[in-house]
Image 1 (cartoon, rainbow, N blue to C red):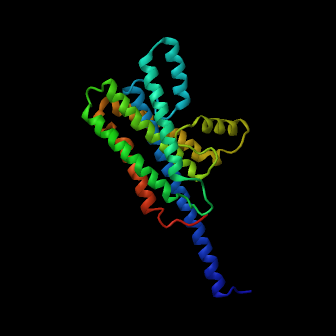
Image 2 (tube, rainbow, N blue to C red):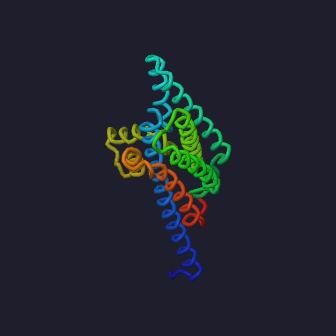
Image 3 (tube, helix red, strand yellow):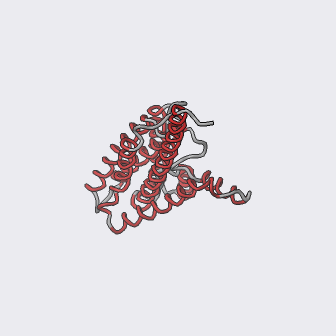
Length: 246
């Protein structure tokens, strides 16, 4: 039996929508990987130039607090505590800004881009202070830079939660690594973990780039997180603007 033209048009429209949605989800995953690259670079810069603490790995910072107390290194203690407090503040602000997942969100809700614009502003301030004190970062400068970067990554962490995807993160990735290893131990296919593997790789690559830039070309190091965050917002605006509902 030959389909009527109207049925053919409907079927074609459904296929086209499915293909568009799949393409948008691939783009979104690329944006997540990019934000993880940003995280790795920012963490490496903080660890190598801002007092040996992290701006996204808060469990690691909690360990560093204990180590600082045990060793009596109170400067490290102060820096680490400051990073944790700033990260918490950023997470709270991000959570309030983006809200909870909704059924009509699509691959990238506009509220996420709005929150990332705030992150861009924080990284712009970070870059300005970094460039101003490029050759001599004092204790006060280090503290302000830690607050700016840790607040930005806390905001980013909360923003990604708006997607409502269990286990998806661009900052706290121990669970991601555990999930991938559990899949290997269970002899499950790695196909479903492709995004997780890319995210883990991006963290390492980003950290390498951030550490190398901070050491050899510090003048451009602070532009790395800024450029990546801007690129993600632009992709959301111009590639995912006409996003299908899911």
